[in-house]
Every structure is written in structure tokens, then in C-alpha cells.
Amino acid sequence: MTKIKLCGLSRPCDIEVANSLEPEYVGFVFAPKSKRYLSPEKAKELKSLLSEQIQAVGVFAGETPENIALLLGGGVIDIAQLHGDEDEEFIANLRTLTDKPIIKAFRVESEKDIEKASSSSADFILLDSGAGTGITFNWQYIKNIQRPYFLAGGLDSENVQAAIKQLAPFAVDVSSGIETDGLKDRQKMKAFAAAVRKEVKL
Image (cartoon, rainbow, N blue to C red; front, top):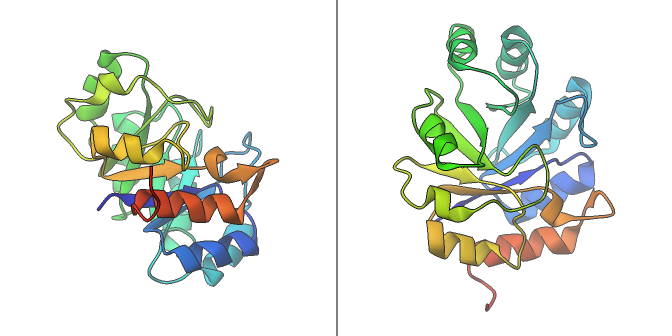
């Protein structure tokens, strides 16, 4: 079954809902320019409330390998997601500091982007339309990709079943699609999880 990542959680009540829905992953955003930015201290507090069955992914852009490794080593997050212009050398440097899994995000604008993503040395790749744009990209570009990936970009409870049927991604990643007025919405979170698990009719 396609796995679920609920990204950009920022409040204890968001964690409470996530614990009840049991997604495989939740995301904490450490990119300072993001409206969903969390300080390491706040993320640690939220992680302490998170079910042990759910893995916390830290989302970074422009961070140093050393700071990322500190959060991984300190148990604040379980997985690092690189959402900036980090290259293969960056990933190699991070691997010398941690053995935790790495997700590398790629912005998909053409088939060339898929070639680059396919050859990444990261443990997982994430395919997105941009940095939190909330817009889908042309899914035709990724029909023939040969490795598992997280699908992101403009997903919500209305279109995620179609995405899963067409593409069979390893996981689906949602943030703005489960928000109302910039905050996570309990009902939208529940509807998204239900749609992924095919508990609702199309």
C-alpha cells in the first residue's frame, strides 16, 4: 500500500491527529524561509508527542550537513529530506556524519529532471512541482521512472486516489492540501488518509 507523509506539522494538535491516523511519516520543516518553519526546540517537543510507529522527517534547504546530523543524532528526526540545491557531494558528506536515511527532493519540470532524480544516491527521492507550491506537475514525466519515490505537489483528498492509480508511488506527501488558512485541518487530514487507504468512494 502507498505510504503517507503528512508534512509541515507545527502544533501539538497536529501531532494528536497524526497519531490517530498513523501515517508512516510526518514532516517537520527546518527551512527558515518557510511559513511552516520549526525551531529545533519546537520540533523536539513535537517529536516527544509523536507515536513511536511514525517516523519524523526533517525538511531542510540550505542547511549544513553538520546541523542536519545533529538533529538526526539527537533523535529529533529520523530521516533527513534535502529540499534545496544539495548535490551528490553534499549527500556524501552527510553520509560520513550519519547512517540515517536521506530523501532528496527534485523539482520536476521536464524529463531531464527525472533522469537526474533517478541517478541520485539518496535512499529515497521526492518528486515535486517546487518548494511548497501546492501545484501538481505533469505526471506524464514520471510514468516510466524505475525507482520508488515520494510524490508531492498539489495533492489533496480529491486527487490522491487518481495519482495512486496512475503512478503507484512509494509514498504520497501532502502539506497545503491538508490546510485551511495556513494551518493543518483535522478533517482534511482525515479525508486525505482515508482517500489514500481507499476508505472513501471516488
